[in-house]
Amino acid sequence: MSADVRTSAASDEAVAALLLEWAPAQRWFAHKGVAAHVERIERTPLDEGGVAQLVALTVRSGEGEDAPRTVYSVPISVRPAPDEALAAALVGELPDVDGARAWVYDGPHDPTWTRALLTLVASEEGAGSRSFGVHGTSADGGLPVPAGARTKVLGGEQSNTSIVVAADEGETPLIAKVFRVLSAGDNPDVVVQTALADAGCGRVPRPSGWVDGHWTDVSGERVAGHFVHLTEFLAGSEDAWRVATAAVAQGRDFSAEARELGRATAEVHAVLAAELATEEATPQRLAALADGLLERVEWATTAVPQLREVAGAARARVDAVRGVAHAPALQRVHGDYHLGQVLHSASRGWVLLDFEGEPLRPLSERSLPDLALRDVAGMLRSFDYAASTVPDPGDWGPRAREAFLDGYAEVVGTDPRQGEQAVLLAALELDKALYEVVYEARNRPDWLRIPLDAVHRLLQSASADPS
Ligand SMILES: Nc1ncnc2c1ncn2[C@@H]1O[C@H](COP(=O)(O)OP(=O)(O)O)[C@@H](O)[C@H]1O
Ligand SMILES: O=P(O)(O)O[C@H]1O[C@H](CO)[C@@H](O[C@H]2O[C@H](CO)[C@@H](O)[C@H](O)[C@H]2O)[C@H](O)[C@H]1O
Image (tube, rainbow, N blue to C red; front, side):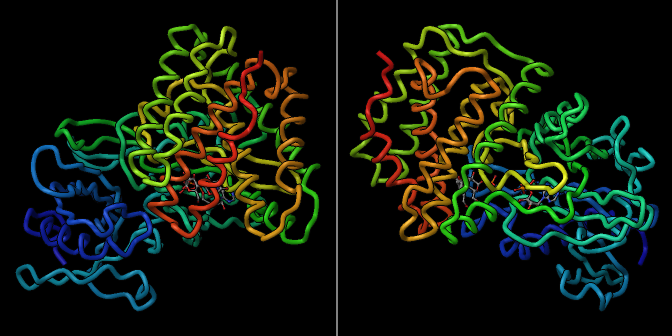
């Protein structure tokens, strides 16, 4: 196969058509069930031979200037002959161009592609052109890429794609997270996790490196951001959702683990406040926060009809934030904190993952300082979800919740259940439950009852007014 088959404009069109046909069956593709059109495709080879490639695919849903657009990162390999070993990862065959044939594969499953990716990071090389290009970086003092570079794509429900890099004796295994939606700006997963690790915090995986670069954004402008994040893989760890739901199913108390998790969360918050930007909680800043919470009430109550009857009460609950006289400073937070974002490692205890923030929020918003209590609220909601996986959880949920708050309060030195902090926490917990109602209505209607019941319960609970 000649190089021009891979790079000509004609083959760009063919690749775009092939990817659009294949993508709707992929977990990361958010344009499922809507009329999707490719507006732009940019491709860059990642290796000498041009087999490993990275595609920036701008997809538009619907017609017109205002139609929503997303830029997806799509790793592919383009081979001159089919490879039987990769049959399960075949995207499709490209039409002949001047008698040359080509087979396209899903890059993360192809060792040629993963080797090219790891080489970029290990040797800090770049690839691509002026409009679309990437560059690998090894984190300062970061973990080296294992020599064998044997890789495996992680299964399971995930909005991005993660590739585990196996290690030989004396090496540390890694995990490469390929961000699937490209957003301009530094990805908080890289920035926040690296800042924590650099400060010596052992509550996050150790860094190895990343791939960043530039592409043409939906607005047509050349922008920059992260494509891949490479960190330590905690082999043999178990995620907290599994640990917690196993405990509920066995009727086993989870208080000791929840208390430790509260302590771990507070430790991470303390390091984030010390290492990254903070902002004083002025009346203006709290008013802006209340406005944001009110917007979310409108968004959720409009999106899900079952919420309309509680709109007034929900507005009153979140608007109470405006009257808080003394709130803790705003700081960088996790942003989408729940049991699925925490691993339990035998040697390290609780380790926090995935600092990207809520996927439904714009990246620019997710990088702003926020109330640390937003993470506390997220985890409280998660205990309620875990308790709801069995028909009769008894007081499992409330006990886990109180133990988590006890652990958090022990480290922070103030109790989020007391005084004005309780007003903030109640507003943020309701806010998260409203978000979850919309998330479940869209993604898992069978789970909708959990956050919907929670919204009603939270609104019935004694007013969070501290007076
Ligand atoms: N460093 C790690 N060590 C072990 N497992 C990990 C690690 N990072 C992620 N995982 C596993 O991959 C899953 C998805 O990772 P996550 O960063 O949350 O991706 P996404 O943003 O796509 O949801 C986690 O729930 C966990 O099971
Ligand atoms: O992990 P993601 O960033 O993809 O987060 C989204 O999906 C989560 C579900 O996978 C969703 O979390 C909700 O369900 C969890 C149980 O599956 C529960 O532990 C969480 O508390 C609950 O919010 C999350 O909201 C969504 O953003």
